[in-house]
Image (tube, one colour):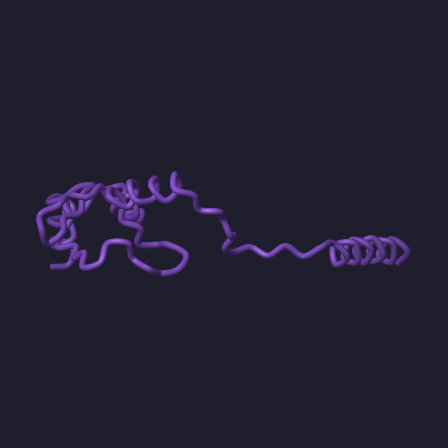
Length: 109
């Protein structure tokens, strides 16, 4: 009983100490954007499609991905993109692998 009471007091003290700590909020941080930063972002946006950004705004308006092959995605204009946002199966196997498609079709039949 005494051990349980001591353990309870230790936990209670730890919780009180944690509650007394200043709260930290995570989220957007205001950053000064100078000309160099803006220029770097523009250069980056030329080559990177940010589909998972914090504000939900896509950087490439009108981008339509039509298909994938191996580690690449292709848009409606024939541009080729290296797919870094793919899920674990695509990362391991690639898009539209013929052997995987055949195996899935065989198992589904």
